[in-house]
Image: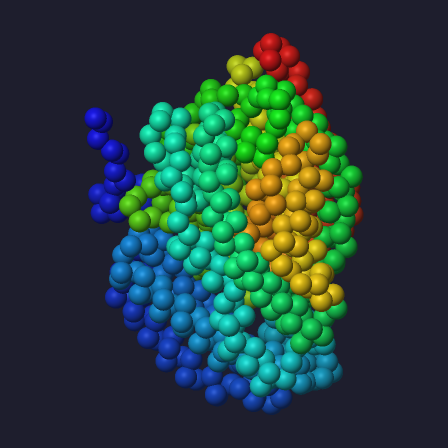
Length: 605
């Protein structure tokens, strides 16, 4: 028998395949010193609390202190979570991460007085400080955001109570996470080669892409037998989470949980409604793609477990990491020399943790703080999908780099609403590059299939999630009990609407709501769909060399939170309060669907 392939240990990896965290702290002892220094700084909070009414100098000193605490805290937190993620079995870094998380909660509670106290001041007093001290001007937009939230900020004592109860409000999500990730035991199924395969979340995702239909069906039905077993528990955790959102919105005098969630970034609720409306209008395009999938798979009935297997068959192309780096650099050339210089720095200065090792966190992400490099975590495999993941995360990291190098700390981050735009713009540019440079029709068809599946998963699927998320919050606010039966029936109807008549009514899919962690994120998922749509427009403008398109795009990457996200995007050339950018994305989807159908005809499929 062949020897089972073992993941390498962290210690056995070559340095060039790992990120260099000494760029943050030279060693763990330096982290400990910084940790203790920040704990000491937190004891100074009483020097600032109660002083905001004592003139411009005291007002500025409190803001500087507050931001300095958070700046140091972010660096500590990022270092600890990166260390923990590179080997989650390492007890030292588990402890370090726990300490940093605890300090974050402690600081949030200690500083909870700031906003309520600021809002006890009249607008006249606040702006008189700015007139008295021109050096305050850098904080104008920051303070303006707080002032505009005046109707929703509670007295200091109540704010402290809410901040202190943060872990309680998050308990439903944490319970879901523990149950879903640690306690569920999934069944063993038979793989395509006859061997037994233990299902897990990661394995399930891989098996859904299998070309062996019996394996996909077994995995699908096997997974959902477990969710069926715990459906009432999951209904309870989801209900509790929804109720906490609705409760906090009510306490803060918002009309709804959605208004509360979107208000932090000043996103009009119409942006959400427009997304759902435009996607619903274009569901016939998804139905057409689903019908093509059914034809190419040559099945009498198309099931939900047939949605992720490649319709072109096994991948006709793959990339080693080194080859992917070269491809990524070449594909991103249209973004200009300034952008390319940051990409080169990322590869040269070990911002990227490349390969999978024992205990390493799964998946991929970009993470960092104002005073760190924008690090990237990968778990590399030689696939086309990993090339897309590389340029996606690079989009996040370059966005972070430009923001932090062009904005003061107070505006040195950006909202999630803006984040996914930078990453998916890169994906769109890579898609165009591959379609322009690959000559093999089968490879081009595979790239088009990859794009269409990505569009399906990011715009159609995430909008489906967004529609369901708003539905359950609205139903709970009306007093409707969110029982497992009600959630399943409602989700089943929505899924049938989205995927259309070509898909069989699998009873298992009605339970999909029970396994989606994003339903615990508080109106988060819609931003994937709006971001992808905006990215489609931006990529087209850049590649078409529209006047000022690249300059406007780079200015968006540098804007951070210096303006409201909607305004940042307007300056970049996309008005996300209108429907046009989503409609334009749908046109790209239709064009690429036409191209795929033509290529398949050429290939005799």
